[in-house]
Length: 161
Image (cartoon, rainbow, N blue to C red; front, side, top):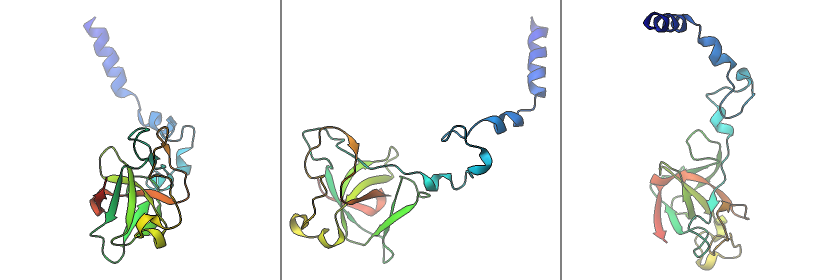
């Protein structure tokens, strides 16, 4: 029995495993040829919607208000997904406010909804309602009229909620 096990282990050690890796599909897009999916830039095309309603149907769809801090004159990049390589979808200036709706599992990114620039600091939100200051029935992706995306949590200070 011991000699059979040794023979099997010896045969396994001699196999060429590099062929197996080339035959496997990319984990995120099954069936896509590897040469069409450069792994270094794959993340840049991924989008993840901001989720609202995580606090349940009795609380506001976005439970907090945050303010952009410590970003300097270039502002804070808002991204399409919660990681640095994701596509930049906009920039927020120092002092801008946003509804904080969700956060990434590692707590490094916040999913936000941004009121229009002219109304961002106005009392009562001015003219456009982003639809996140009242409850929603269930947890869902944000699809309202305001801009949404992901920002670094280190650059947002909670001011309400």
